[in-house]
Amino acid sequence: MPFDPKKHIMPTQDPAIRATNFKEVALGYSPTIAKDEALRCLNCPTKPCVTKCPVHIDIPGFIKKIKEDDLEGAYSVIAESSSLPAVCGRVCPQERQCESACTLGIKFEPVGIGRLERFVADYHNENSKTKAVKPESNGHKVAVVGSGPSGLACASDLAKQGFEVTIYEALHKAGGVLIYGIPEFRLPKKIVAREIEGLKELGVDIQTNVVIGKTITIDELFEEGYEAIFIGSGAGLPKFMGIPGESLKNVFSANEFLTRINLMGAYLPESDTPIFHAKKVAVVGGGNVAMDAARSARRLGAEVSIVYRRTEKELPARVEEVEHAKEEGIKFELLTNPIEILGSEDGSVSSLKCIRMELGEPDASGRRSPVPVKDSEFVEDFDCVIMALGTSPNPLIKNTTAGIETEKHGCLIVNEEEETTRQNVFAGGDAVTGAATVILAMGAGKKAAASIAKRLLEK
Image (cartoon, rainbow, N blue to C red; front, side, top):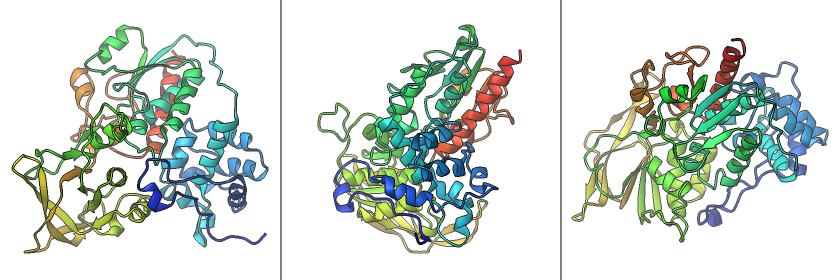
């Protein structure tokens, strides 16, 4: 068959239809498309794609199994390194990681590695009836704080080695940011539930509604017999701009807005959790969370604008998410920065005052710094403003635990083994790096699990 220089397109819902529902946008490859895409892989002996994968999946190895029509074999290869393949296949920025190193991508489009990972994981979840077997206990107990991607990865690796692992989750459902932060149309909740069920089969105990630092402290966990603790509590403390009007009604952090929708099902008519159904929404920010908030508000019936102070070239969100947002009718107010939120007599949002920006010299991150354009202020009517400006770690654990140090932004300080400044307390994911990607959090969780195992098994 002739060689295809482009990766196979991911089938999706029609934009006009999907903008009115919360069903998954991407429909997944068919077996035929998946095999055709797999045949594009050059099976490079140096495996540059593996080097760029934070959990080092044997990518050519699992793709080779797809070529051979051995889909369960392909899943087994992935599962050697990743505990969340169905999740990562959907939300990881492969274009900046494994696919960016694909040799084929030097002259053509890289292999659709993420799409193939999703295909294999979905096939396994739909067809495999085999349950994980709980290994024999090695007699060591480890506590994991947080059930997001770093905590799940750490717990999985430890459980497979026979550790007695308990996950403590502050919310009433396990999954962390996978369940409260990423919308159903990007990551269906049943996918996360299936991955968590696999952890339970390995013997992992998950305790929900437990706030470490309030319900129980790190010190008390050690007193209960845990020999090591992994903190994967994420970065759930939202940031705001500090401009006038942020205390008005109908100004939300993206965290609150998305949590109400994703975790509490506020978009459902029968939900007990209310959500404001705005007519016109401004989402301030340009990352994936901003896209998620904007696309969720659009599905609730609002006219939505993304307000971002740089150009589209500097948007940190995935290109795929930006394209999907545009297809769904979301407007982009670029080179625009809010300076005040104006209110009505009842104390709710009435409009947003902004100023036009232009790009000046590069800032510390290498991006050109936006600077205001003189006399360019304008006001546009909105009845809801959502701030999607990033997050930082909640200081609760640090403030209730002796010996744990943080850097100036509140992120936990760890060494090369992912151990904090307190012995036998390890950490990883957004609690250490600040808001980052699912796969990077998983990589930190796996690294910490290896360090914990080495520490406890060599006693």
